[in-house]
Amino acid sequence: MMMLFLPGLLSGQSRIRERVYVSTDREVYVAGDAVWMSAYCVDASSGKLSTFSKTAYVEVHSSAGMVQTAKVALEGGRGGGRLMLPNSLPTGNYRLLAYTALGASEEGFDPAVGARTLSVFNTFSNERIEGGVKVVGQAPAAAALPQSGGLAVSASAGAAGKARITVTNRGSEAVTFSLSVRHGDGIPAPEGGRIADFVGSMRALPAARGFNDDVVPEYEGEIIRARVTGTDAEGLQSVKEKYAFISSPGDGQNIYTAPISDDGTATFFTSNIYGDQNMFLEIEDVDRDNICHLEILSPFLNLDPGDIPALALYPGYAEALELRGVAMQLERNFDSDTLYSELPARQHLVLDPNSCKSYILDDYTRFPVMEDIFIEFIPEIRARQVNGKRELQVLVTDQRGQYRSLHGMALILLDGVPVLDHGKILSYDPLLVKRIDIYPDSYFVGIRGFSGIVNFVTYKGTLPSMAFEDNVRIVDFQGTCYPLAYTCEGVGDEYPDYRQTLLWHPLLTLGPGESMEMDCKMPVYSGRFEAVAEGLTSSGGPVSASSSF
Image (cartoon, rainbow, N blue to C red):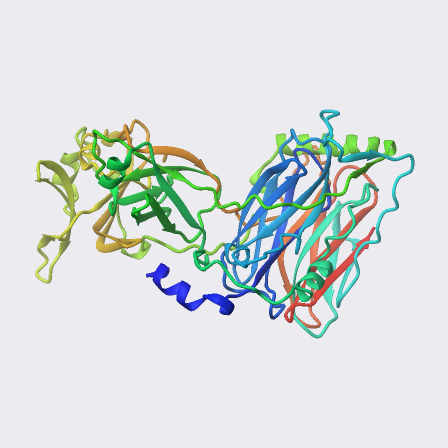
């Protein structure tokens, strides 16, 4: 339904011209650092935040090619995430590019709009980007901290060991912004790439020339594309119009289906899958004599980063970089979720928790045979022989209180992953199962209908001892970043606190005349620190504010 509807709605000149800018916690990093990101997806025609696309794609390039990627979930044009720089990156400047599938579908799309230059120093090796570093005898002058728009930032002494950061909106419009508090170590940031440059570049865009109508806008979340591999033309013919499944272990909310088209591809419309996952890929009812698999296609476009300026390397940076390198290693070794605060994330629920009936098996007599559990105390499930195969059916009660079968096939899950051969669940060790969740309704997963869903949840949650069919593939999948604020509220005395970024919040808002205060825990070393806010007004104007202390 979506594929039929959207191209007609958003074809030709009527498409939204989306551009993406990513604000980061700093502009200078060491290899192995986390890059904290705040994304702004803007309608270039109006200058205001675009509420359409739900996924932004981030690429980091050297002059030799793409070195890292990330996906950021968007809501109302805003999103946050974290990108980890590999500790093998050679010293040099890198280009950060961001886009949506809709924005990049515009003819003549220029990835330079919103591009950022980030400096990366590798404190583990002397390797440098070939031709990308120039040694200078005198350190370049550090650029002034940004100041524009109606925001004001100040810092004062807070509680013991903390600084209090105050942000005030002195303008006449609401603002959405990110806030970074960091150590100012004197290493200058690359020139350009501020949000004011982004807004100016958007306003200077030429008129749209056209769009690729084959690109479906991601207005619910990432659209995952896969193709059938490992088969010949005859084998491809045998799987056409069959259903493909993708899923990741969990509560059953990350499961999607799609029919296989004539060209051997499948398109899954997701609502964003968060975090890096083990993704299970399977094609329904595959001929055992002609085994084939699914392969997920990369959504990243590997854009041309353009000319990246050389990094100016000054010997006087050595002391600051030594501290940065030690801090990065400590933070990686002592990384803890107590340093982060989860921000609200939009997720579509495939399964309705209100309709779920759960059986915790330890509350009952434990049986060594799975079918005995259904016979003895779970009347909503029964096993039957259908067309020579063992099949589990979900039962519901009618008006007289009698159990009756839903017509059609039930979807059976183990830790959220489909088990299409129900015989494998009937032979599974029930002593590994903690509980059984039953959804006694008719469900559509994608456009594939099921008569009830049953999720067998194990104690480990990792599908222990399950032997899948040969056509099931398990692959590493890069999901969208969890939206996080780096508040460091859980830093204790046992933590060797040499943090260089002290506080980061990607999604803050202030109305006209409003103020907010945030306490920032200070590290064990002294020095000069910077508080920097960057964002947009409700009409799309750039705002920046900073303070050093």
